[in-house]
Amino acid sequence: MFELRDVVVSIGEIVVLDHITARVADGGRITAVQGPSGAGKSTLLRLCNRLVSPTSGDVHFRGTPIGALDPIALRRRVGMVFQRPTLFPGSVRDNLLTADPGADPDAMIDVLERSRARAGLLDRDGDALSGGEAQRVCLARTLLTQPEVLLMDEPTSALDPTATRGLEELGRALADEGMPILWVTHDLEQSDRIADERIVLVDGRIARPDELAHYLAREEVDHDHDADPPEDHHHHAGGEPHWTDPIGEESDGRS
Image (cartoon, rainbow, N blue to C red; front, side, top):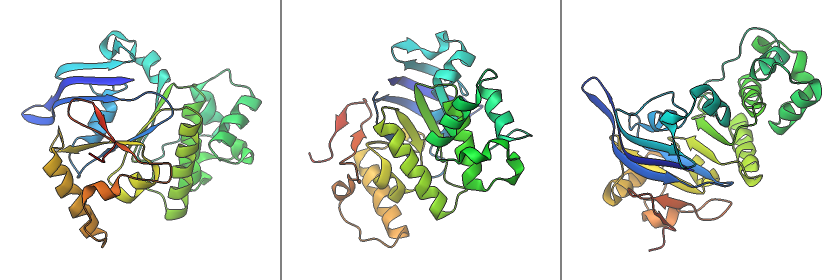
């Protein structure tokens, strides 16, 4: 679906992403983009809908260079949910109409229900919503554009544990319906719950095997878990996630 070929992103003298080559599979799968703070996770995500452009290298979406695609049309095909829910002034209805001014009430109720938000929220003011409700409305607003893929940039970081689990279950349900999702997270336990595949970044690069093991061990120490070998953590409720290596090939973690 997405292919990054030797991608570099620099801001002035700072290299944010350093020669990234990877592929993201199509189909109803969740690919977790992981790594320590400052590793370049959000930048990689933003490359996928042209919120960031590569300094060098190429990004392709379903075989077409992203630079050749109209950015507005691309962002309707590649929807994005940001770290903190941001609603426009007005009601939930007003917010949904910004995504599709021609949407009828049935369509708006449908996306609210798909996002596990109550249909009764339609005429509520956005400022009156809880964090979890606001994030679900932001997701509904994105779904109203009928995207082909979702980009999720740490969408649960501002939510409480109950709302976090609810959004994780929603993401899993959307993937099971066939929606590809790229989900940035720094939380290894979260990726264990939701991910089918993982891309792990360290210092703007795809993590080498030794870096990957160090990252996993360090995170587990931080979470007071036993430091088992990395291969013992290639699982979640839906099966064993794959690891995406520096050339984009996949391993089931058992080799």
